[in-house]
Image (cartoon, rainbow, N blue to C red; front, side, top):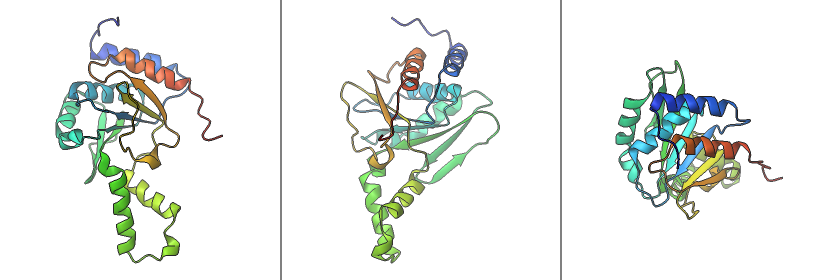
Length: 210
């Protein structure tokens, strides 16, 4: 059984201390909710813990689309509980909302199936409407358009919730080198669970196709 939390500031201090000793940290964590309903309190904690660890990008993928529909609830809770000197940059379909760059910051993005196959279809329609010759439509041009939409670097670490590993139509072109690790649930996640999974990631040897 994990020890009880001693409070947010104590949790943050422990995360800073423990993660500074790790040989590597992900630049971008993506969380796959699987079949779980969003717990805004726990997702808020994950965002704030990522800030404490110095991770600059985090995304959440909910294949049901519930989290995207209620993104304002998550945004309100994160903004309400963050430290005064920390800044959150929210990315959505309307672009990035920036509330400052002084102090620690993190980029947050909510993903759903529309960012996968549906987005690929939209890119193809856009290229066709621009009257681009077929010779100029290739893997590189499609990749460039998709990356412009996605904005974030490819995730280094994917955390999936539940017993079953399924991508649920996560945008496949983003995860070719992603290391996937499992947690039982994001509900009631403890900050020591978060430290543990970062420690597990730091020990992974990513051969990048070699």
